[in-house]
Length: 610
View 1: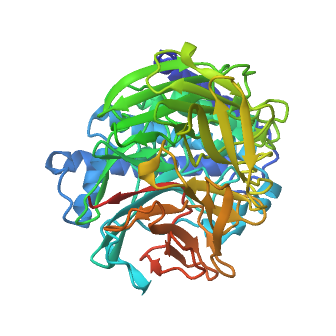
View 2: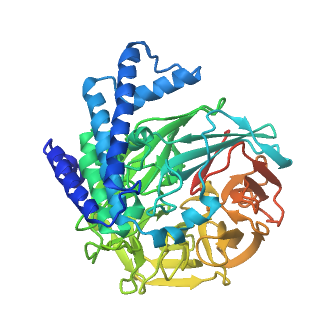
View 3: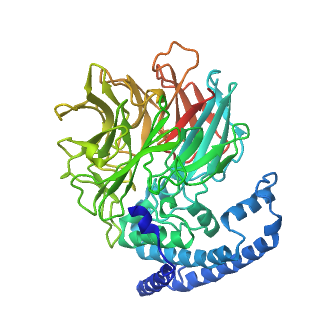
């Protein structure tokens, strides 16, 4: 396939790396950087010598103890570190040489690119420097630890609340850091017998294992797309560095956006890579990162979008993935059933003008159909001076919905619905076939008419909107019912994905995309706002979406349950808030304070004990 062909690079890449490194050294030397600055070439060379010396000793120690390490022994701190060293650096001489020389080489090249790409003025404005809410946790909580509780945890709340957060290996961040950067830190809260315990785990993707040794962001990040040198770093990391380490290009990433539980396994998801499998010990809270092979071994050599949809009744998982780096966007669609790939094919978007590629973050399903979104929100061209927006709104390109049968076999089965205007749909609440007219698909989502500045979190306002797609006439109608509220991150009762739904929950923000001030409950049938709550003076949402948890042994009302969400309070304390989903009130039922601060989170899932 196209993606696999691109990743089969040969040993001649080593010479290309050397040539690129020399070029970058010359570029850096030509820049007006003070020789007294730690960013100067002499400073870099000194750091390189120190790094190689440290790695020499690390390799020597690994050789001495390689024969006596038990990979499964996690009983002491020392054995933990040994097992991790074995995971990170193989005992083979070939791999030791790779880590001994490749890490310092690519780190130095990466630092030089950042020097060329740097902007002090931009750093002063970067919210990841000036806002403490973006600070990462200081440690992993490797086993369950008690959470401080304010209030009484409902006794019927039993299960795991798991969510994902991007966390940088280095702090403070660089000028290219955004809320999409970093490796995934998986957070887990276990509710049992009226108590709550917390654990966390940084996803050990193949690339993160190397970065944890290097203590530097070697691999390209979305933020690097703002400049041409940054784009060079992305290309180098995905198609040069990764093959040299034997890492497939579809495994380059941080697994930092979402988690899903499917077919008895947990998976961490990110836009640029294949899903990473992990497991959670429900008793101890110990988490382990497993392989990055997607939902079935050797069936998907492609990135996966962060929001697959799961049909629990059929045990099906519907997923898409796309390549934004190619001259033309290539999209892949697939359906897994009982953990086995049932159908898969690739297609191109209609009217895509390379190299501007639409941002396809989410999708939807109904009982019979799947819906993909061709947004007016697109990857933009980087600039030499580093002022590119990464993603920008294209007012000249109409958004489209692509509707296809769930088990479609080819692109010829996709039917495109032009929405008649440019708009942005980042996340979808739900979709279903109208019970009174099965030829009509109903879809609800927050809709915006501008893009997001992912560095400054401004200029984005989502409005709850209903779309109706008539499969007979090919016409589209829409009704906006947001009542002036700017909202995002919609969630429903998980068991109703693809089925008629009445209630949805979103976060709300008053000014732009970044400051999440509270929650909103929506009636999708009556198309109106039902209730809303504020987190309180100075308190902000940690982006984490409102997770619905059904109550046990109730009447079965759709909204009979709880809402869990993550909040940073005015004093910079982080907490998990629990609300009654039926009647949102200003004061949460419970506040849970973890033993370590929560990271700036994204998406998650609830797994009940049943």
